[in-house]
Length: 490
Image (cartoon, rainbow, N blue to C red; front, side):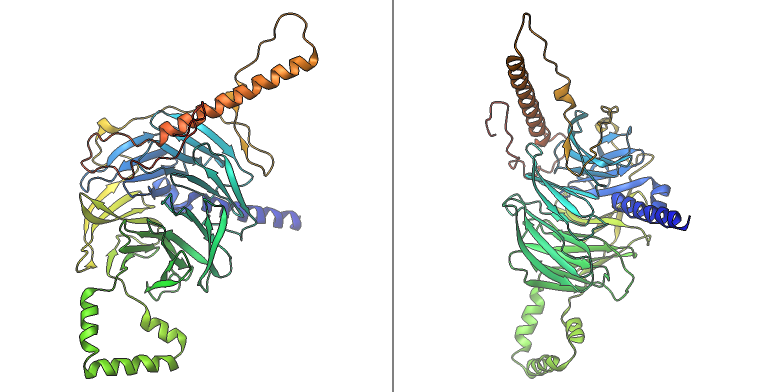
């Protein structure tokens, strides 16, 4: 009986960690209160995705005063929802089916394809060429044009949180994930050439957060200690910046995010403070340092710097670490959240989406920094908060569940292919001829199905036309190459 009890406890503990990984954003208590399972910004921070037990929503971020609903589905729960930029293509995982990934055209309310995996899906990342699915001890890299599995990274260190990041740049298409679960090693993988690029020894403690800058030349990292944020060069792993977030030891980093121009980096945690760091030495500091270097004070500074070589490395590192350029004091603490720095009407704003079901919008003084003030608070779940009802569209429930895969191999759902049947011809036909005809017909059905899937993927990946937003859509020319039924690459 004791052995059975221990096994049950171990199974329960493993299930708890898996569910916490699936939720991505919230802990179970917060999820029960707000109903929010998942909150995330899209690749260029022009929209916000919210997944909850009541469904999922996409919000436009083109206004401070109004949170416009782009799309809403209230028929199925969603614990992971990822949108491709501002296109209609999305990847989602239901809380009720944590091993199944669905790729959908959400504006049409159609499912393009779905895949089942051998374990719980902990996170999904995508850009215009790749889609990555992260399991506890493996990563699957798909090509976005037809969802073919290009490469599988197996036997990765246990990654219960599903920590990984994919660059949004299609030219520098890199994937980063923990190389160890005991120290803070960052493994960077080239998702185009399908080979390891570099390994960065970023921290002494295990990793807690990773994020590429928009052009994938830099990567920001944080460890489970949560006191220091570091920025490295992706090409050779050189450390470029080191920032002191705080001195508290029990801090869990929730989110790291670069601004689109890579000049600012924000960091949020389970404390009430969000830190914004500036990735540039202030011109005034450079001028002052130049002037002082020519005076007696400059010589004194050099003497102090030289003596730092005799101090313990921990003390020297503290002297060299940068401090926050600006900060935000949230009206809550102890909740996970996602942060972003983005332009709204050509003005840089800090956005924080929290597990309590609210979006907080703050100003950011790019010249002086300092404390950021709250401009607006929007409700994300429940009763709409200043939503333009004309822009809301809903969709009914999709097709039924496909049979789950029973092995570790990914099994693609081909219900659409099996729906077509081949009629038997008249007269007698020998077995070999019948088999040949059946094989040829089946191949044609599969080819047509793949062509339809590619066409649907291309249609979903097209950016929608501008209707009411005065801000032009970004990366409109960058679309994934899609093979049509005739084999033409678009």
